[in-house]
Length: 347
Image 1 (cartoon, one colour):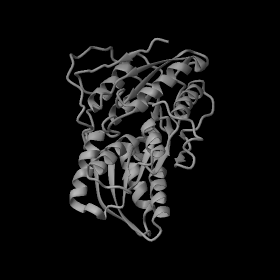
Image 2 (cartoon, one colour):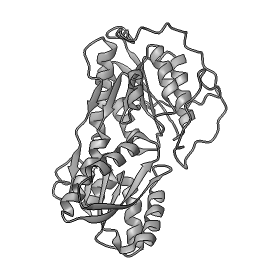
Image 3 (cartoon, rainbow, N blue to C red):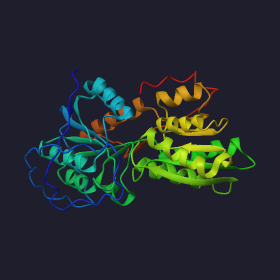
């Protein structure tokens, strides 16, 4: 099926205002584009909190679904959409992607536009989980099924989403801590290089890692998150930390495989070998780096299973069937011992 990729930017802000973005995501912010008009969704009375929400569509109806990731330039997001496109017919859906361009205003505008266009469901993976909350609340009030994909809302706002599908990023961070503890039972000094500051994955992976290290002999010398999911940034951060800590660095935890590529390059340029490296995601770069010995552990999430689960649960919700609000897809721990046995990722 021909890919439908739409980028919609609205000039008007939501009537009740946007939550301020504490950490703007990325150096890849989208250029400004002319505003496009969209019909406003008709106002609806808010159902009492104790009543179950009405199904977004009658059973069997073709669902109009919007996929709004932080950026379609992110290979994981693009691959997730490919899977949704390939299988949308199995769930009687039409899935359209809107490129968030790593810009919370663009993502918010896309949500608002989809409300006006009468979409039945939204699949959201925002660059800033706080900035989209007002738009998510508006979508919920309009009766749209809201599914969070790989990034969840803060706990106090989860009543405004119907579904979460993804991995447990807190658990992924704990798995990274376990890898270091097992490698260095007598303790070690490591650094942590984070994903985009303020994103759900960055926050949870950081918190999980540090809670997992409690009571161990692993000391985190330094931690710095990036402004965007950029391997150039992780290389620069690692270079700075090498200057600061030198040979004291025994290991590096990077929040994602592509970022670990930058860390590995910084070590190579400095002539440093033998640093123990752990990263999360399960992308091609992670598998390749495990195979060539430059990355020791890849904590892998299965994008195919996450994407199909999102479609399945949305279909059940729309048809008024029972469904789980929180759907965690298991992680794989990839090492040199099993990397050849696991399916090679396509992203």
